[in-house]
Length: 332
Image (cartoon, rainbow, N blue to C red; front, side):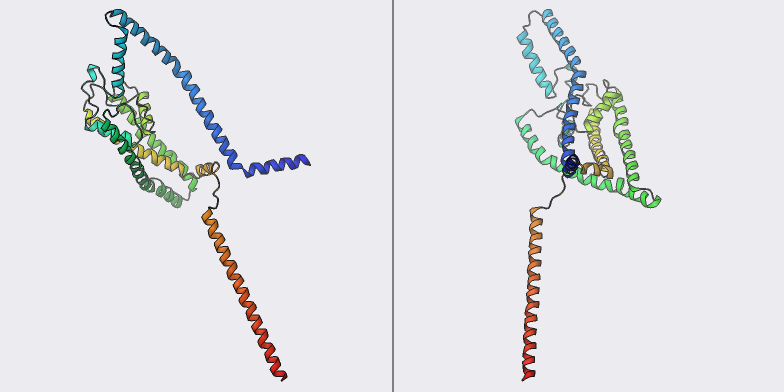
C-alpha cells in the first residue's frame, strides 16, 4: 500500500515537472555532444599537428645549419613579422604580391562576410580608422541584415512553402502534415543540389588546389556562417577574372544564406518539430498585468452584482411599504 502510494506520488511529481526533466536531459545531452566532438577532433587532428610541428622544427634546424651567418633570433623576428602580416591577408611570397585585399570587389566580399557574421578572418582592417568603422558598421549592419533576411524569407515562404502545401492539400485531399514533410525533404534536396553539390564542382574546377571534398567543405562552412577561413576562394595568384569571381562569390553567399533560412523555416513549421520544441519549453504563465486585469474585472463584476442586489432589496422594501400603506387605507 505504501509502495503504491509512493510510486503514484513519484509519477505525479514527474508529470508535474515534465518540462524541467526534458530540459535537464537536453542540457546534459548537449554537454555530452560537446565532449564527444572534442574527443573526436582531438584524436583525429592531434597526430597531424604533431607531425607538422616536427617537420617545421626539422626545416628550421636545417635552414639554420645551411645558413650559419644567420642567427636564430633574427630568423624568429623575421618569421614573426611575416606571420603577423599573413594573418591580416598580406603575404610576402612573390606569387601572391599582385593580389590586393582592399580593392572594391575584395572589400565588398569582406563587407558581406561581416554583415552575414561569416567572418573568414583572412582579411582584417589594419588601420585604426578601419577598425573603428568596422565596429560601427557591424553594430548598424548586422541588425539591418537580420531585418532584411527576415523580410525576404517571409515573402519567399509564402510562395515556396505555404501556398504549395495548401494547394496540394486542398486539390488532392492529402494529409497536410504528410505533404509538409515531403515538401520540406524535396526543398532540402534542392538546396543541397543547387548550393552545395553544383557549387562544389565549380569551385573544384576553378581552384587549382581544391578537390571536391574541400570545395564542399567551403560551401558548408560558408552557408552555415561558421567561416573558419582556412579555405577562401579567389586568393590564388593565377586567378583569372578575380574581380568578377569575387563578385560572383558574394552573390552566391547571399543567395545561399537566404535559401538556407527558407529551408530551416520550412522545417521549423512542421507539426512534429513544433511538438518536439514544446517538450523543452516552459508553459506560458499569466503575466502580472493579465492577473491585474482579471482581478479588476472580477472586482467590477462583484461591485455591480452587489449593487444589483441592493437595488432589488430596496425595491422589495419600497414595495412592501406600499402594500402595507394600502392595507391601512383599506382598513380605514
